[in-house]
Length: 262
Image (tube, rainbow, N blue to C red; front, side):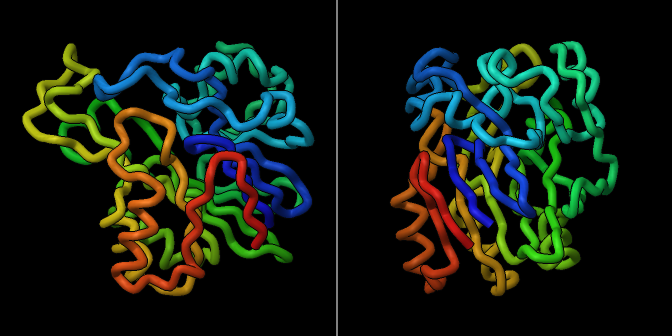
């Protein structure tokens, strides 16, 4: 397989003879509001033109519809007939956007030679879960390829641990920016009164927990370097894991646009 990080959680994957684009987020730099009061988002530009990102794509795979995973520019750029694979709750909103080739994955679906299994994700902890909505991860399996687990936006939790132990992925694409909402930067003031900082996805400590829980898979850490409410940088994540004796050959922390062949 080949995994190319585009930006944030947007990855382009060559797998099972097909090209999958996960969570397309195409917004121009500084065109979206801040999440933490530090900077408009995204904080960096796309590394490639949208036309090049979409070149040769066979399928779109969506973990959830938050704007840093599927934004207005992506909605306008992707052909309405492109095949989408999505969690059930996202079918109706996407249909209202005009997309017509929507494949809902309740549990498992087979496309060409690849089996896609939808698995649970937990986008945060505590009170913030009231507004995060449904989020999914996916496991891709194909006879000639290594099993691939795309965690989606999730913290390290029982469902992620169960997925790893049940499906035995050889590669895990993990969203690892340690993004948080704090009482001071709460974008949901109308709905929530936050009294403490709420973690939304894995940080360096939770990535360490994940890789030490089961030592056989490789990790590609993404969802880093694009948004102003992150707490983990690429440099810090690599240094932290190395300091804790994690084999550096197991961990990939790609730059935007970088390709990894496995």
